[in-house]
Length: 145
Ligand code: FES
Image (cartoon, rainbow, N blue to C red; front, side, top):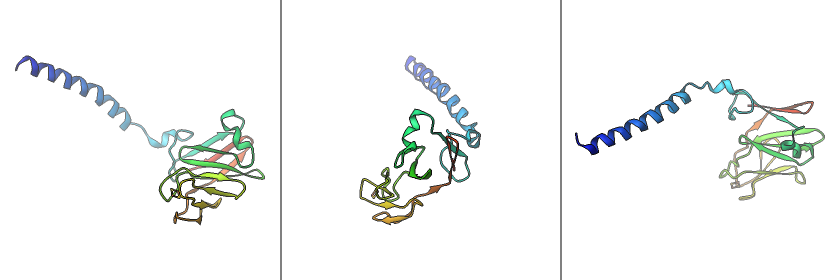
């Protein structure tokens, strides 16, 4: 074994020592233990809460206001009603927005339109957006995943 071989083995060994602990720590996480604001959207996997009293969420206090969090667009549709839909357009994945004038969710890319229940009102999208149950208690919105 020459000097070059020794150096290569030391570098390779250091890389393994750095990578292995991070891989092991990710394997040990329980995806359901993060129920709350860190949970990724998926059926029955938890909930997302939004506190309307926080400045970051203040847009939701007005009709037409929206917030996008964890792949979900939340919109205040008026009269203390809120809607939560998957924010990625089912056509090609662009992020949709909400138009209170049209009471519809609109994709800026090719113009698909979705109703407040997520159904397609206008293509080219042909598949509905996933709708999430949302409720309000005091200043807290809760989206069930
Ligand atoms: S990506 Fe939304 S309509 Fe095409």
